[in-house]
Image (tube, rainbow, N blue to C red):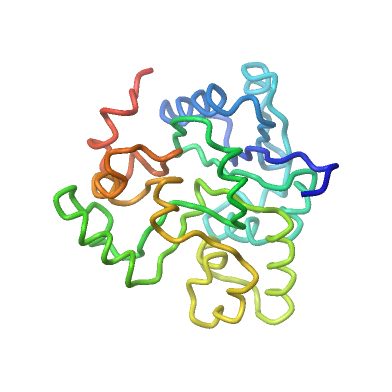
Length: 250
């Protein structure tokens, strides 16, 4: 890492001023656990977040074209844009922390030290693996071991120099990416196999210790009842499991 770079910033996409209770809780937890790092709100240029600035004076703000926040497809275009990552070249890494994430403890520096270019919660794009129960944890493990795994981007650590290099190479040889942005960086599509040498990814057992997303009860069995650094989409996948760890009304 270059001496003139800071190690890592937490980047939180925010697309509207009104937040749900769960989003407010997610942000509060992020600031409590990771507030010693630079925390940057990525927002539409026209969005007025004066109230948020007042509540959290330590926050920094980066604005992007409003069009990037109009839909999921538009957000995917932002996250596969070289210009987005150029915005954060002062840092070696950024942690994308969408407000459906929840961080449990500060392991951010330790995860950066592992040297991966991209880390996210391991998942499979098949509904039958969305909520595998604890008693069937081995089924989830076998699927993760034998199928193409996507490391979810909603809570993900990304190394800026690697992403800039990867996108430059991708844009040279391929048309614009049309799918979910995390699938591009995990090289989930068969045609991306030639790019595998340009992105260092963890194996799924280690990624599971970074974050849970789908099948959290099974994931908890596979980590021997140890919570990960953070989780993503906890309200969507088995909120009953998370109720013992996340106090909704905190």
